[in-house]
Image (cartoon, rainbow, N blue to C red; front, side, top):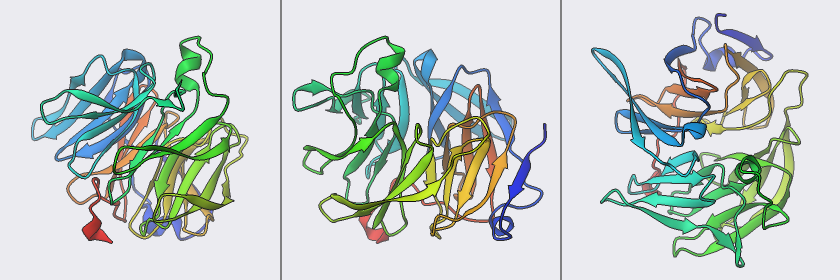
Length: 300
């Protein structure tokens, strides 16, 4: 099956070239997730295989190796301001950080004395504060009952404190900041929509509102999410990758061979979307530029 487009607004083709292809650049995995670009390398999760994978491109072609195993069945990955790897670990039920010596330290694993559910996806604000979602997918996969009776969205402050921000999601999943970091988008996989929140300097989230309804007859649910420099949002969801403008209007979808789970900007010019989709890794070049990771305060 070739890449196809569900164009709902002409603005979609200004972002996605008509001849763009989802190129399969690696395969043979069990379930891919959580990609992040670091230097000239893509790191991503192969959750059931309990490993973090390293993907690189050279003149000789593509290479795949294991970056970390066991990984705590890590899902979402990102980088902090020092380019240290931040991982949401399902089976360890924690958010961890890789130190310069290669060791991993726990940043958060409990709230008010109770174990977290299974941290899922994560973003780092330009001041270093870490925001993450905590649905129960990982504990359910392990056949365990969650200790918490809610599915929260949290912030780890710059001094290491854990703060609960929102607790009324069913299955909070992907999240991303607007370019000015004044809005945080969070999708709810069970409810198949994206909500937007106003972000305050202390991390508090207010004015939660329905931003985009992603309900569809196609299989799949909202999952990973990224934003380009102009504020357009790219979210994996039913049938493919949904592209929305800053107002939440759906411009169209990118549809490929496998249901996508997550995505990340990459390549030297940050104009490629790397897409983790079930057993494979894909790449598509766009007519826009993503927001580099990590983000520094000097950007704002």
